[in-house]
Length: 323
Image 1 (spheres, rainbow, N blue to C red):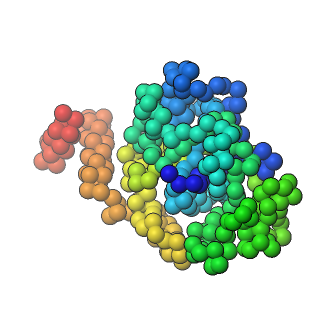
Image 2 (image 1 turned 120 degrees about the vertical axis):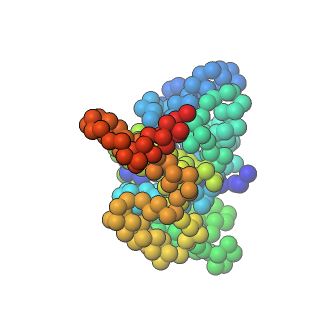
């Protein structure tokens, strides 16, 4: 496993970043010990991975995928979120202070049932708290974009991290060890960093922070911390392909490419919603069947006697599908 974990939050996130303490779970009083009480731990995990859950849990989710953290942050921007932050977490420091688990490994070990859409090998959870000294840096979206586009070599990477310093060289970097260093590191107004919103959260503790967006999309490719959030009225199967529709290419680290994708997406929405040409054949067939079923129900409810070949075809297709 890698040495870094990532957490993405925005102004609607329940578990916000606090520059003095880090991240604190909504529920800090409930114990979570899979060894001592596996049944209770199983219940908590099932709640935490239920996207419609409204019960606080003592868990905080993270992802070990930089790529997914980037896509998640961009998705939140697409949905109108303004104060997006990406925290980079030192796994070793975190594990020395709190219990950290890979979600699916733990769920499988204690028999927790997780819906297929919420199963992510990239997701990790910790209990109650992500301490401030485990958080290496908190980026705005624009800063994170520069960070992932920078070269790996330290001389060419303005966001390199060495010997406790982040930033553009040692002159602008700040030591993580001192309180002054932390303040400069996270919220240096001269450097253009943004202070976080301390209002109300994904991930799991994020899902229900916004009652209008209860569901979330997890990448089947590499999993997620939590969630790319979409509206409730979308069909359940819609989320499986929506990431390919909105983001058909994941290698768009060039800002111009990202803007081009956004422009194409907005055009598709104006012209009648999703660009179904990007969907799988199975999804298109499922959509066609749903429309056929709705047409049939409407005709039957209106009690219009219609024995046309089209009606008979729709009836047969529907009856065949539900066998």
